[in-house]
Amino acid sequence: MIHYKTKEEIEIMRHSCLLVGKAHAIIAAALKPGITTMQVNNLVETFIRDNGGIPSFLNYSGFPYATCISMNNAVVHGFPNNTPIKDGDIISLDIGVFKNGFHGDSAYTYAVGEVSTEVKQLLRVTKESLYCGIDKARQGNRIGDIAYAIQEHTEKKYGYGVVRDLVGHGLGRKLHEDPQVPNYGKRGSKEKLKEGMVLAIEPMINMGVKEVLHLDDGWTVLTKDGKPSAHFEHDVHITKAGPDILSSFEEIEAAEKTNVNLSWSY
Ligand code: MG
Ligand code: MG
Image (cartoon, rainbow, N blue to C red; front, side, top):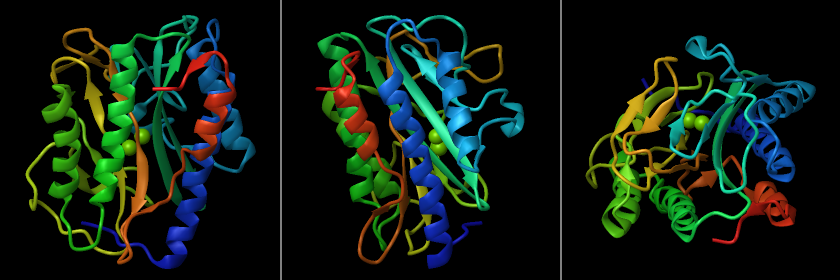
């Protein structure tokens, strides 16, 4: 069942979504070779709690950490750990904030130090595909229009693998609501988009094959061929006037550009 939000609820959600962006921006400023993903996780958790929120992912179906941190060949749902990040690593960080009864949920992939041209292209194209999907997030369109736009830009144009096992979702009082938002599919298919819907649109794009492996920890998802994967996610409110992006990359991108330890120009 799809939960349509009132204007008041949208503004509460916007606050949660923007807090997620601010938590990301702290990490965009702090990332460098030598920092551990556990330190990243703890910085995020402290920031969320200091701002009156609760990390959405902690204890979600038993997930044991505040954030999902997935490096290099990990697609999503990775555990933070005490291994230092190295020059050349890419870090997909997914953050959720629950505050005032509503969730925000946004992911971003960071490139630490110098990464290859191929990896830079993967990050650029994955981020672009998110905006291709968002451009279709308009009243009267269907979920399949978003899905098709993402698949077209990544799989058809660049030969990348669009992950099939994991999809975007509705967002609200629950972290995962209806409808599902796949990153592949047919134009004009699935649910019709209507004002008041909030969708977490989140392309998970592999440089190589689309197939993934699920680790024994019950959570971590890896690419089957060991090649890198990227993940960008925005929360989008459907309106009659067009897509209203509740989350923001603005502060993340500004922090990225001033952090000499990150590759951001791609
Ligand atoms: Mg997420
Ligand atoms: Mg999500």
